[in-house]
Length: 272
Image (cartoon, rainbow, N blue to C red; front, side, top):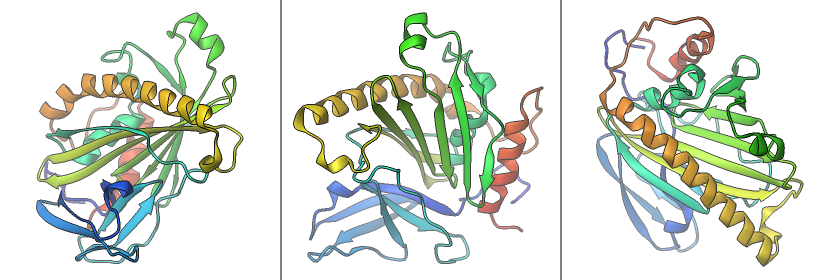
């Protein structure tokens, strides 16, 4: 990684569009890495973009980038349930680098200040190549009735610096919620952020065959998840839009996760 105060574009997979936006024969233009790229789905279903490998994961179209032009060396995992796609989404533009946003995932000490809610990390982040997993338990400052009914630990998966998926099982309701936070660099210190949500039955191996009433419940829960998530993102936007990158930040006690995250993130940048 460079030692300047400005981070370069990282390698990895980055969100460009929802798959449903690209019907056979359609064309879309998206801003990516300070350039406009054209996405095209042929009438036979093959998805293409000039100079970029593409992948579809859970109804999301992702583009691969490597500063040295290396072909994709890894893939983003799907969810456990087949057929899960986002049913609610929100996006915004942020004046910062993708790493500055996704680093919040391991910065649990900031939660009580802007969000008025704490959280307990259930063990240190676990790195496996380009994937980083961690688990978070909502803090005891939630309302008592909510704590008793919704006992759920958040499982978080980072796949590179542009992809975050949160899995929220709710055994008491028989549901599992999914939240995606996608961070796509559109230019120097400019990031397009997408927040998307979905819901499925907790013990169903395939989400495509649910009944119409159950499908309605899933969509309603996904919309509720999105409202909550967007409210928290809005609280962070002021910091993201004004903060600067610190290559060697001062760390307090219990900030070990940030050091581990920074070490893991180095793999997505050129070594010199």
